[in-house]
Length: 117
Image (tube, rainbow, N blue to C red):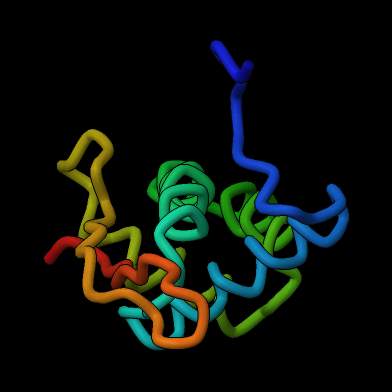
C-alpha cells in the first residue's frame, strides 16, 4: 500500500528518475509545452513548481539554486529572467496538465504540461 507515500517511482532507479525530471524540466522551459505520460506529468508538476518558486526571487542565489537542479545555463537563465517573472504575483499553480489521448503502442494516458499564462 502507498498510503501517504510522497512521490511516484515511475519504474526507475532514483538517479534515473532525477535525470528524467531534470530533462523534462529543461524541455518544458525551452518549449513552453510538452507531451508526456500522465504520471510523469504529475510528478514533473511538483518538481518544476518548486524550481519556479525558487526562481521568483531573481537574485544570484536563485540562479545558483535553480542551476544546481537543472545543470543547464540556458534553461536556468530563461527560467529566472523570463518565466518566473510572469509568476511574481501568483502563489503556486504555475503549470497546467491537460489529458490528451491514449498512446497507441501501450495505451498509456498522455498529457500536455504547459505553463499557465
